[in-house]
Image: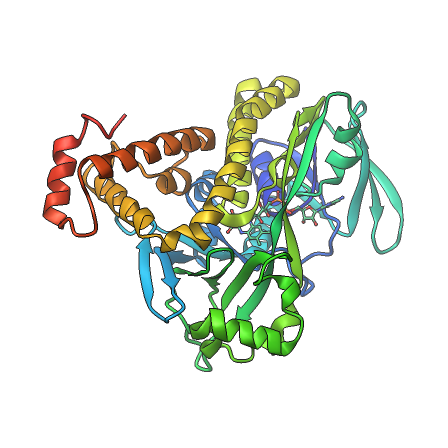
Length: 451
Ligand SMILES: Cc1cc2nc3c(=O)[nH]c(=O)nc-3n(C[C@H](O)[C@H](O)[C@H](O)COP(=O)(O)OP(=O)(O)OC[C@H]3O[C@@H](n4cnc5c(N)ncnc54)[C@H](O)[C@@H]3O)c2cc1C
């Protein structure tokens, strides 16, 4: 039987093990952490995340989507919270399209369960990869608890060991002509857990992603099935009036929340007491190329780690699995051909999802408060409602389709320019009534706005 090694049993590695099992591979899956299913360790990073079309497609292809759906909470749009306490709802799509909040630990655990229950995947925990011999397909490990060093040899090695991949660092980065860049953004993030009411109910509307956009920084909240919300404050580390370094004392924190997020402060007056429950973490974009050498390949964050503002990092990693599985069928045992085709196809998409993620930070923290931006969103949404097969707003291309990310990025830029002209040329404003807007759209369709 063909043998595969996967390094890193995070989200992508665990899903990819299921794919490989279905393709007839026996998988050894090595993870440096302890088994999160037996220990109350967190799966790291955010407690919950948003899954959208690409993620579901990859899960459904191996029959595990419905298991994850059981604990997924639909979010139909954003609710923006202003300083004066007013709120506005901004739907993500049409016909109740939603992105879904899922627990990182839950999805990771279920994927490991499913891989293991096939009898074709063996999981090794506390097993830290320390390097590879890519000429011999050997991976080297050290056990984190007993310190024993060991190695494994297989037909093919998949590195799904995340943004700070050891495989990439210890092996790929030593190759001639391997390009690599790691760029931290100015901002970091801190998680805050907003507990459920004492009866278990939600303190905010459950089926939405909440945002408190404040220009240079923002707070967001995603629902959890126990009635709590995982909230994340994104802001600069330093150099601004409102930055993490200026929130040193409990008084600083209380004053900041009372001033900038008064409605949130009312829901969570204990904010200063819980401030140190979670660390302040940094955010980086990591680009590299090539993604393979001989029989070793990078997938997920190891290949294209991005900042979380489009909620696409995991979705893009899961899409790597979809694409790799298709190419495996096409190339059969020619791994070199398969990996070359994979990196050629996916690298532009990895780059694009990173660019899109950076763009969306500006939209979430700032533009969502801009009347011109919201007018454009309203017009785009109406065109999409009237002509769903002919016009897809950028957000829908990214979150509700599997149009390649780089195509979405390019098309999105083009549409943005055209839409601005369209609004200007037709004198559309907030006072344009719905009937008139529909007439303008019907008259113009096919002539000027749609490519
Ligand atoms: C704050 C935040 C919010 C996010 N929200 C979203 C979201 O809403 N939607 C979305 O799609 N994405 C989101 N993401 C991105 C998402 O978390 C990542 O894209 C995703 O986790 C990538 O999966 P992965 O399996 O490639 O890497 P990881 O999930 O990082 O898994 C890597 C695994 O490899 C293990 N490992 C590392 N080194 C070694 C080693 N040397 N030996 C053995 N094992 C090793 C790690 O312990 C880990 O288990 C978010 C990220 C952050 C930081």
